[in-house]
Each structure stands twice: as C-alpha cells, then as structure tokens.
Length: 174
Ligand SMILES: [Zn+2]
Image (cartoon, rainbow, N blue to C red; front, side, top):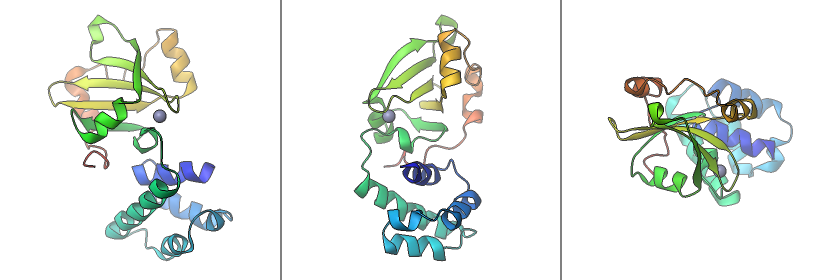
C-alpha cells in the first residue's frame, strides 16, 4: 500500500513534482493499482506546468477519496502545515486528535496530539495572533525524545510562527 502513501504525499504537497514524475515512470506496479484513465493522465502530464499539476492533484485526490476514503485527515496534513481556527479542515482534524502532552506553562501554545485512528503523532502550536494551528508530523525518534522531555524547538518562538509555515494547507478551504 506504499503507493497510496506516495499519492497522498504528492497531493498534499510533501513530494515534489519531479520526484513524483520519476516515481510514476519507475514504479512498474502503479499502472495496475490505479484506473487506466488516471494512469494515462499521469503519463501524459507536463509536470512543469502549474495548472496541469493542479488538475492532476485533483484527479488523484478524487481517486483516493473514492477508493481509499481515509478514516482520519492525517494523510492530508503536510509534514509542516497550517490551518485556520474553525475551518472545516481543522474541525475534521481535531475530531480524531487527542491531546496527550503539553510542553509546559512557558510554552502554553505547544502540545502533542495523537490520532486515535492511525496513531500518527503531531506537534501542534496554537497561534491566537493569526487564529491558526500549526502542525508538524513526528517520527518515532522525535516522539521518544518528547517522552524524555526533549521537545523540538521549531514552534518555540510564539511571534515567529507564521513565518515558519507561511501558507495554509490546500485542504483548508474544503
Ligand atoms: Zn490519523
């Protein structure tokens, strides 16, 4: 099921156009996993054209939602992402995330969240200046470090958050 993960990485913006194009040409199996029409669209696409890439992402997104409807939104959240308070995207994300640890009173805006569906763990900062949440996808090493109270420092500067992640997730509008 690695190809589903790769398709999601591309759609959400964590895999570059160049790397995705290489993957499409090099993976012998992808053709058998997706529909003929989608495969043709991918093979024929000019990945250097911005509008084409946007169209391709929409096609893949439709394919994924119809065939592999995710039970949570983690696969749509970029490794580093931003989403507004009260947006549908944020509401959907937090319906499955549970706060499991806080960084401490000096860092009241930073918490650790665990997805109760897929068990992805997220570092989340809550920015009340811009009314935005910031997300960082954590790997097992980072999670273990946090259990030892060794937190990533990426969100530590509260007034700097909006410069770390300047653009909202493309899914925030949905
Ligand atoms: Zn999840």
